[in-house]
Length: 123
Image (cartoon, rainbow, N blue to C red; front, side):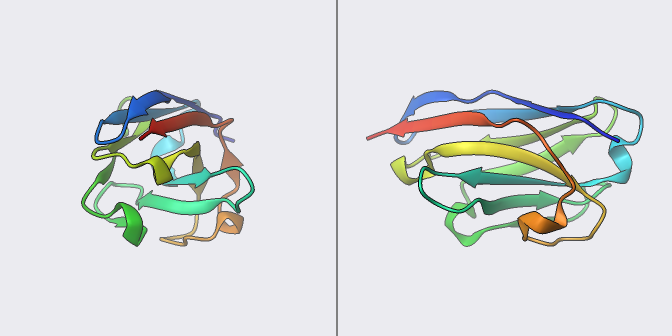
């Protein structure tokens, strides 16, 4: 079973950038599709971005298209989320997660989660 640890969150002004990392343990990282989700206070956890096992397929929620980029380095067992042009509404705890299913935006489709990293965007 893979274990996931996120890092890279913090406080940034609107219009700024952050790069989140999610480091995975184990030798099976390349066999998992990966997703980034976020959860703001009082709201449900929502899908942000997806990347397939090989990195050849990606998907984004509409609100982050053109601003966020998901990528992965299977040699380093790491998936990234580059976040540019950040907005206050991007403030949330960001989680990475692993799945065996292909391109499913539902949190229920992901079987392993990290502990989350806080992203706060000030106006």
